[in-house]
Length: 548
RNA sequence: GCCCCCAUCGUCUAGAGGCCUAGGACGCCACCCUUUCAAGGUGGAGAUCACCGGUUCGAAUCCGGUUGGGGGUACCA
Image 1 (tube, rainbow, N blue to C red):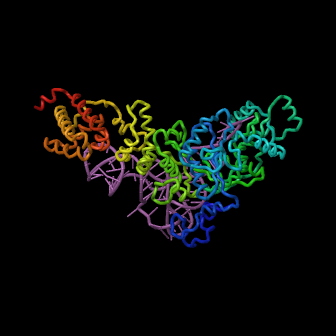
Image 2: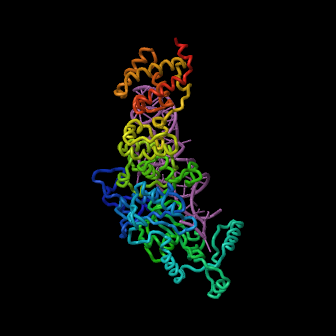
Image 3: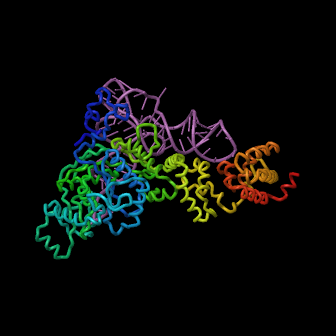
């Protein structure tokens, strides 16, 4: 066993003779130019090549937690030069669907997390020497391994029915005993087995757990020991209908795919002894384990659809971008140790260290994600942002919230004024949708700035209309519009802000918009005049008389 | 119930026995910038490091216990 940071001395430096002895410091605390090889290597120096996997089950859309596990596996693989494998656990035919499978694969591709072996790689055909990479195609293998376990008496047929087991469980519950399989079928004689079979009972296959304590050194959690008596008795590895079960398929596949490190959620920590027992029974090397902290609902329970938005697809649909989601997910449970926190995927690969993953669960904080998303939107090159924005504008058009779809040049011209104002790409319609609507609805009350009355507003809009008309279509630029309007305000003794607000509401129907003059230019000369006319008409007609 | 894991501002975290009167970020508040909204800048509030003991000259950090939280406990994954 390689030492972990929770080894008996509590000091990781003992395995690193290059460290000066008196001061025990991590490479993060003192990242000198001559820094030693990352501790990663000492953790993974086993002879086995590094091979990690993510094994999603297509029984639902891509979950945030799966995305995070995938990311950590990916970072570890890329950091160490290992191989990253994707395999589909699609044995649960009743709940699995091809649509979910597509959602998961698409989502992972969208995040930019590439794998080296899998049922499809980068959208191309299956690749890898250890396939098939979908469980539904591995049945012969499970049957073969199950037969081996049976032949070696490491597993035995169990004829108990679901009802019988349920009764046992209820009994245990009533007597306040931990639920546990009694082992009724553990030592059946051949005659007894024959009798059950004659009854027409189908047998499930149970694995003999045995006695003792299973210990392992988790890369993140340190030394863990669990007594086999806490495992609930001999567990089923193949159902009576022949379907192999999770713990079993998982181990069989990890063996077949030569997985060296199992990096997964903490919810599997308690199941790990079962897996280790299986590896042992099959005489196979046991991989290193790293159990990641869970992502939590605001009430600190395991993140669930009930209490949180868990589908990656929903985040995509709202306009979160991959850079932000990847960045955010990496920071849930891991920190670089520096004060930087904006990282690209490649930068994460350079800095990631499985050993410094935090141990406690982390509440998913959407506001922080949105902030990061805004940071990333501002960093995207303008042309790229046009590409990313287009689908969201198309969605606005389809939904009938805008009346025409702007061309790429038009979107491109909007970029400077929207990129600082978008927490989400999906906010684009709300931000500048008024540019692409034929008419905007006007609330006469909001047309009148606080310090003004309706008459002043009407008069100001008429004057502003004249000034803008005077600028003319040809020189209709922000720099041409602003000075004469400021002059107008000065001449009439109006606060520029009030004048501009009246124009803003008249032209856009809103009190909050991107900078006014750029907005008017984006709107266009004719449309601006038209909207000013409509606004003037919307104000009380006698307003003009009152000011006279 | 039993087993396992965990515990630093509301949230994400830094912290590896003296550098900690605990740092950063999100969010919140104020101010600056400013035509609105953002963005950006500056400042502020916000953590008796869950609690109690112990080890030590010295503990957020090491040890034990308590409490609290979470996860697991299927012929689900």
